[in-house]
Image (cartoon, rainbow, N blue to C red):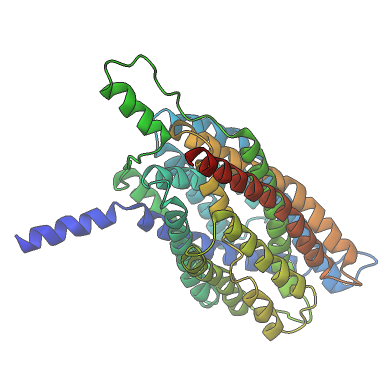
Length: 439
């Protein structure tokens, strides 16, 4: 009997969303380091007239990533919308399963590039396949939709941050070992292990993932209870409406913050490979692990600050954390200074999950998938803007101040705090009005 209970509990754990997230992120963290080092190796012999060897390498490196990142952000827009529609019609697992197919195909193509010395441009084709499957936007929106359905409004932001924590913990482990695995077989072992992780996550999503829905006593549910339990009343409460102003402000804040974070982090890979840092594959893995460690500190920050701070305040704390750390990054010249700058970003991952939580509270449950996918698409449009902008600015300032892009990111983050502050004032006025009505 005891053994049966234990087996049932173990099978229940295997069906949880958290396991899938960790498998996917393990594979992705290994893939990210592998692709970075493969691109660095292929760009090591590039020379351009009128440029130094290092400037030529940096230009080739950033040009590749600019094209690659634009593809993986532009192509998924329509597929992600279609997958969101399917999700809201009841096919909740579809965005996760389909996007993981694209993850697996792109990893397989990188493995072929490494094994058979195929041209690096093959990865542009991998990015297209990744995008046609919905990409990260469809995957993460699908995950957050399942999280929203499986949690109450009261606990939603905490549950979302827990998911972010597990995602970051898996990335931390993967990043720590990625540099060492890369040294075995010039990347073959690293890419192979990452591909296996993504294959396991796909199989889990198809055969094991359990979709559950927790009913919360929100406005929508209360109206249904009132309409079904009161036979004598002909008045039925309408379902909750979309708070359009707050939704727009949240989208603007998310756009600006993602513009700053994505633009700065996208340049970090090239920044640490050039002098004076000149990182090796192992150091790149450790640097990525430091970034993943922010998931843990952000989660702890939510737990601590939530006792005395609102969601709006949490978002502002996270934005201040990123703005200060990335500003300091502009002046980094040693590895120890790099980690000091990253330590200032302790709470930089709080804003986006908390924005998602606030967004889910502005729309009815039937529109969770569409709203969260809409947010992911806004972030993709941010990517279409910041990828070429930050790349070209970095290339133009490389010879006199490579860290200028990080100062720019800090300024944009401060601008992103404005719409969040407006939302805070609106929510405070609404709460005050409700208290007056009660009195």
